Length: 175
Image 1 (cartoon, rainbow, N blue to C red):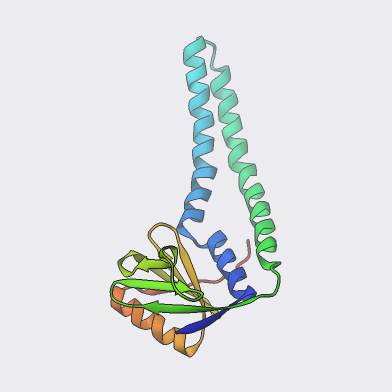
Image 2: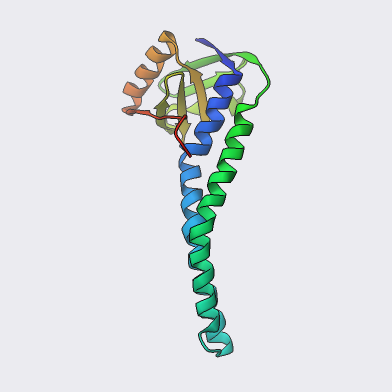
């Protein structure tokens, strides 16, 4: 099946990757909480090594608390900037071939190369907005498909074959 990918689809994929991908969610949690915890561990280690009063521990506790207060604000600001960049894409249109079978999914412009073929068994997530479908694979790769009757039918068949639920996501959520 041939699908036309426009700049709106690419922009939606970029926004999806920033807001709803598993890697983005994991990175946000690690950046927020692990670094604050590292501040505390660092202070305890410095106090233990240099036999100082709990000056370093208290200072690291304060730094960790400040990190938990200010980093989420910084992260939201950075995310808004990346989303604005994702929305400013030059107009384009590419016709791609989307084919799937029991063993392989290919998404290519012409003949599919090895990097444009994915094992059907690697598909682990299907998400949908009002305008697009997003197919997620195990190694973090994603495919965007525009929402049409044909793609809806193919994606629903693929979801049934892989026994996956189609998630509904909102790309216009407030950040």
